[in-house]
Length: 154
Image (tube, rainbow, N blue to C red; front, top):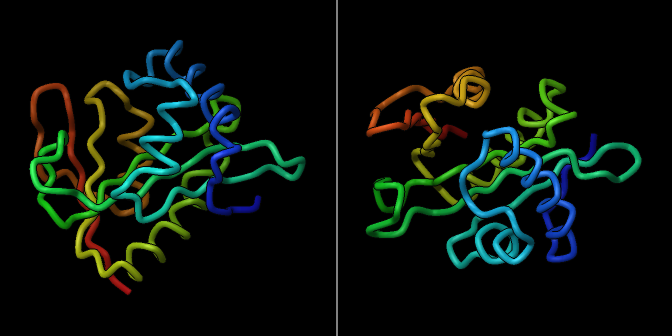
């Protein structure tokens, strides 16, 4: 599996598997290519947006790391990182998220982040388990969500 930075041309393929996640009830945010470009690949607060590729070049997943701005919609402390991970349904439980997190962790260290927040739907057992497995710990539970924190170390 290869990990690289996402480019604008990836938006259509990413959108396609985000729509699959939406149909399965695992995603509530928009899934169209324009949203992928503006909120993930080309977002002003982006530190990194990485994709994992299969041998044939198919995008298996993406992981976004942004810096939390003051008053962000997630209620995350300004200056913390905000992470999002999305894996193609047929690639789940194959190490895609963990491979992506190697690159994301390096980007977080380089950006000198102290903490990263993952705000997860309370009913999303797979995502809750994934983040716990890579060292995120629950630090708050607003209505319908579980917010996990990762303390960044070099």
